[in-house]
Length: 314
Length: 284
Image (cartoon, each protein chain N blue to C red):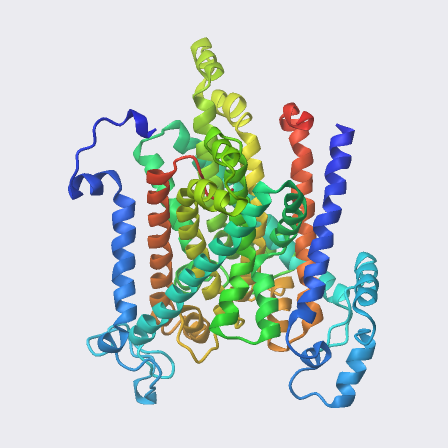
């Protein structure tokens, strides 16, 4: 088991190296002088020269990459071109809202999706099953900003149940914090619900056809314990895998959701950076989000050891 | 599976009954494609604005109302369909082509495999929307850049799919036979291995098309996609967001249209999957 964990940990290195090379080379793939791109349209030659020097763009490419790579590993993601604040500081300042949104969405989406998926598999072929599968296809097709605005229009503007937009820190109280996150996390969670409900249903259907389920129900195990303890636990691996893969979906959705609901998180930071061509921020957030994705999937891979002992030997 | 199906009755009614999603999705797509092609005959000028007609609600003169500059929402929506369909189709073609070539090589040559799959894992780790934002920020916004930017993150998914198929067929007797006959590698890949990938690739292409349409709209919405002066569904929603309370139709019309198109493509994909290859599931 230890060797499996070590092997998986080492597997992170090449992936993050590729991410690093990719993010680094993007700036050099673009036509023209990277310093001029960063400086923007109205830059003076002195400005461009200053940027070129500060980023070390006058040195050989490999040297640039290694020094950039070491700096990134130490947590130094460069300095914002617009505000001169280190990107790491900016991302830290904006982390709270993004993490809050991601966690509430995960909780909302996983609990709804697994419940729906289990019910659909249990009553396979029924009206409920078809409704869940219909919801799954629809959930995949409606973009976050469309669900978001429809919910804002009815729930926030017409019925005034919840705030239209914005964010409150958790330190300002649990209820204000949660109230501001309900609409965003449902809007963002919809696609995720669709993805997970589908897999839960498929995986449950497979398990429910197994002999031990028939044995369990023949022995007189009640329906709910049978579904949860005997079936869902054994159907867990594909579901958890998809939750991990879906993190990528969630991250892309976070960027858009924060724009719809005006949540001052990392996504807003990136979107504001587009308009100002603040490239270090875009670059830094790519590294951070890719790192989060890789680490979550690493954690999930390792968690398989506990769910399914067979996996560690393969 | 299909082997258990009794002798198939022919006829279109039977096809509709067995594959309702293909029919519904397909018809919806044909309708929207026709509307996009014949846009100049169907709708008025999508760019022309008359301040006197600002924020008119849907009615007989403007079917879906007008936006804050007095531009016809219906016209902009019909023209917006062009961009969505072009982007969806182009991304599907580019991603499938690049992904198949890479996947065939990776699946067949072990040495290529290790390097290429590490590369693909790396690209998959970067959130696709951020990658696209970065590319658009660097290269400037245009439809071409948007298409390339959305295609890149889709390539690894196709590569993985094709590679898996190649791995499963490359040692089967019919490939072995062709190889021992002295068939050259290029022809072997093209004539004997590639055909096995066609069915899953068709299904994958529809999913890529759907996700590309969504991503394009998302990028335009964020201001990192198609230039704002071109009418697209994402641009329309972004441009009218301040008027949600007083003129919700300016946002709902393009939003619902976007969702419908993506739904149609997804339904088509699900139907094709059930018909062509029941084993593959989405999201994997």
